[in-house]
Structure formats: structure tokens, C-alpha cells
Length: 398
Ligand SMILES: [Zn+2]
Image (cartoon, rainbow, N blue to C red):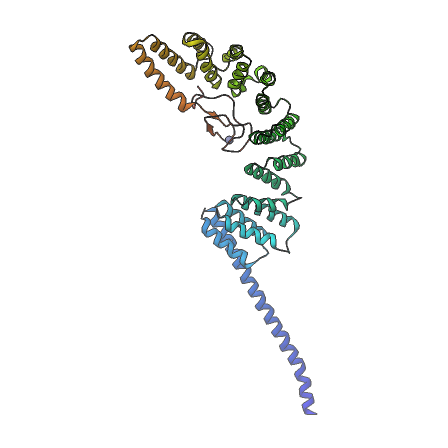
């Protein structure tokens, strides 16, 4: 009986001890959580501080520590991924973004974000097939538009013009912005590839598409005329290029040589040349002068060429025209066998020629890339139609 009373007293005591133990464990757990939270907060602040102080290596170490402590920190993973990519550590960026896109527990919008970032990593690494696959996984949400822009950029790098046309058409719908000029260029690229492969019908078809995208697209008209020449139809080529001669003569130099050759095939070379000469009034410095001078000298001789250059110097004085004037005077001195004049004109001609050759450049209005020849697409920034057709003669645009 005494033993039973003792047991009855022991039961509440055991309950009490259990309760105390549970409280103790809870406190311990809370304490551990607090320590972990504090550690995470410390690492995060340290990482941010280091980032602000431009100490990227240490910042990355601190932030990786946070990501390891809490795998749920999606935003932090994204920040780390883009930091790695910006630093050129593409492999690490790919690992971070791949880890995110493989996670089953993240929201669909975060998965789309991860696929987009992964696509950009692969683009940076030059792994174009994998970039395309990742970017194509983004089909909606706020990363849909930048993913399509990246795809369009990638197709241009790959020179996959047909896919570029599809991407640009999709972007037109997404952005409510016209991509017609670019689409016309993509068709021009297809036409040039077909011409090289001697598939003239395919080239003609592509040019018609380019002209449907942008009527009177200059590059498309130039190629259309070239195709007419290949088909031995100089009259048609001249008629096509006539639009450029009348309406957009600042691009005339791109076809000037071919224009004169087309007229030559008809036995009317001089007539073709005479049609170009009036345009020197506005374009006395560029390649149009180069072409006209070369042909005029050949057809009319140095005396007439000198008269033409004197007129150009009156209308639009330029270093190019002055150089050519010395060249012509040198030719005349040679013809007259005048050694003094020959020496003088040779020195002036060579000095100026060196200067005009080294300074004559086309300049991209977007990135400032300067090039000796005209480009429809800037090799520096990959944008289309950013070069002015006007060739400058120096940094000041003399
Ligand atoms: Zn550029």
C-alpha cells in the first residue's frame, strides 16, 4: 500500500521532469536557430558590404556561405549566378543556374528566370545549342521577352537567318515594335547565301520577301539589281538601281561601279558615268568620288579629270578630292616629262594619300566603331543600319 502511494507521487514528478526537458530542448533548438539566423545575417551583411567595397572574391565566398546555410534562398542564388557571369566565371554561373532550374520546389516564374539566365550563360560560353534549348523553355512571364531577344541575337551570331525571321516576327507581337528593317536584312542575307550557292531563284524569292517587309529597302534593291546582272539583264538592273540614284543617292556609291559596268554592257558607259557626276555636288569626299574619278580618268583622260576635280573642290572641298587632284597633276607632269613638277606632285600626292587612307572611315552611330568599308550590320555592336553612308575624313568629320 505504501509502495502504491509512492508511485502515485512519482507520476506527476515524472510529468514535471518531462515538461522541463521539453522546454529545455525547445530553448536549445531556439538558441541554435538564433545562432544560425545570426550567422546567415552576418554572412549576408558581410557579403553586401564586400560587394559595395568592390571586393568581389570575398563577397562571393560570404554569399556562397549563406546559400549553403539556407538552400531556399532563391534570390541569392540568382544574384550569385549573375555575379559569376559578370566576372567571366561562366562555368560557376552555369552550375548555380542549373541547380536552380533543376529544383522541383521553386515557383514556375523562378524556373523560367533560371532557364533564361542559364541560356545567357550558355550564350556567353559559346554553347549555342544548349543556349537555344534553355531559352526556348521560357514561354511566358516577364522573362519571355528578354529570352526572345537573346534568341534573336543568337540566331544572328549563328547566321541562322530563317530562325532569326521567326524570332523577330514573334518579338513584333510581344513588343508591339517593328522589326521589319531587320527582317528585310535577314532576307537579304538569305538571298546572298543563295546567290553564292548559285540558286538564283531562291535568291530572287528572298529578295521579294525583303521588299515585302520594307518596300524600296536599299540593300534589297542593290541585290535585286545584282541578280538581274547575273541573269544578263543590265537594263533591268539599271531600272532597279534607278530608284537609289533618284531617291537615296547617298547610297549610290555602293552600286556606282556596277552601274557603270551595266551601262558598259549596253555600250553606253559614258552615259552611265555622266548620270553619276551631278551627285558629286553633295558627295565630294566619299567613295562615289573614288569610282567616278577612276572611270572618268580612264574614259576622258587627265586633263578632263583635273577640270572635274577643280569643280568638286569648288562645290565640296575635301582631302579626297585634293589627293586626287595631286594624283592627276602628277600624271600630267609624267605625260609632259616635267621632272620638277613630277617630284613636287608625287610628294604632295603621297602625303595626302597616306592621310586620307588612314583617316577615311565609316562610323557606327551606336557604338562608335570605325571601319574602312560600309557595313549594314555593325561588327562592333551587331546593330543594323547604324552606319552613316557618309564616309568621314577624320575624327572631326572634315
Ligand atoms: Zn556599332
